[in-house]
Each structure stands twice: as C-alpha cells, then as structure tokens.
Length: 75
Image (cartoon, rainbow, N blue to C red; front, side, top):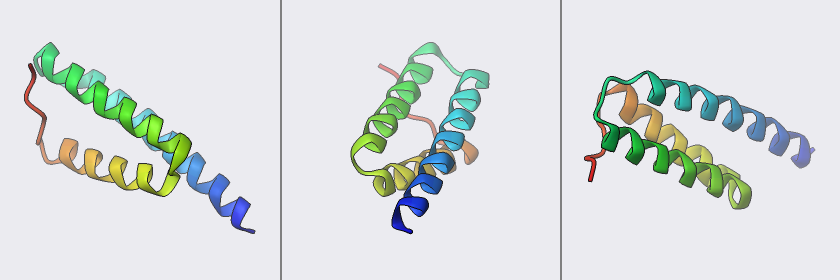
C-alpha cells in the first residue's frame, strides 16, 4: 500500500515539475532570473530521487513563490 502512495506522489511531483518548467519558460524575466529558477527546479528534481516528500515540499514553495511573483535575484 505504501508503494502505491509513493507512486502516486511521484506522479504528482512529476506533473507539477512539468507545470513549473512551463511557467518558468513563459516568464518575462531577465535570463539570469530564469537560470536561477531553472537551478531551483534542478535541485527539486535531484531531491525527488532521494526524498520525494521533501521534493514535494520544495516544489510547493517554489510554485507559491512563482504564483506570488517572488523570483530569485539573478547573478
């Protein structure tokens, strides 16, 4: 049963990562900001391989920041 819930969470995180990547691509922001957001998405993707619940939390925070217009500063 736990495996089923893990697979379900994995599917949800994968779908949300696709959504997040699309949002980042569509943003009208400087390239440095887009790169910073892409790095955050890579961190979430890497975290999903080792700690799926943590990756889901990180992704939730990132999506909330995107929805509220809070972006990292570019280099």
